[in-house]
Amino acid sequence: MSGAPHLMLNWGDWFDLLSHFLSLSLISFGGALSTAPEMHRYLVEGQHWLDEQQFAGSIALAQAAPGPNVLFVALLGWHVGLNAGGLPAALSGALLAMLGILVPSTTLACLAANWVHANRGLRPVRAFKQGMAPVVVALIVATGWILAGAHASPEHGWSLWLLAAASALLAWRSGVHMLWLLGAGAVLGWFGAV
Image (cartoon, rainbow, N blue to C red; front, side, top):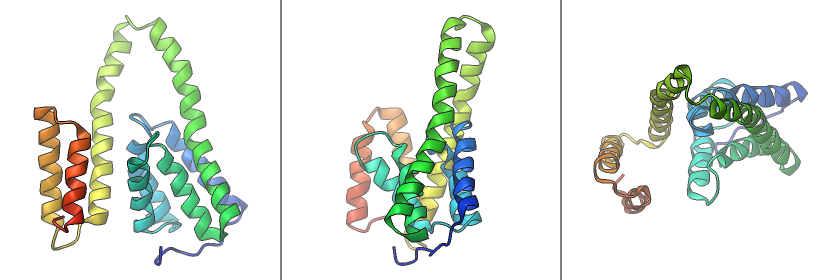
């Protein structure tokens, strides 16, 4: 990316990257993508380790690629490392980011799943599961807001928001598979409609 920052990261910076992803891992209800707004705030706005295009491009590439969408975290770490000094740093960044986002949540999820399964009939367990649903939805909406804002140009901004609202309504009400909507959005983007 032409506008990518050139960084000089020290050991403390790498530790900060790891510790930030470790903490995000514990609040990533709904998956790592739900914490993308906080990742953006930290990596782009706070530390200036990534630019807007690298951040949005990492998420877009991971969403388009087969496999788990958590791979965008590795791409974010990869770009931080590339901006800091090439391939060894890029590999280190990807590894630290992935370890940070995966280890705490995976450990907690395994322990909690065993406990919830053993206590699934308890009223507090059922209430917690029902209460977390709106939180997850709100975090995903916040992620969409940031990603749409990164790509919204003044002349096409309104059409992007209109397309997002129409797609959400269509997916919710009609049961159209999400891949058809993604494909339609890609075609509209290809022709410059959005």
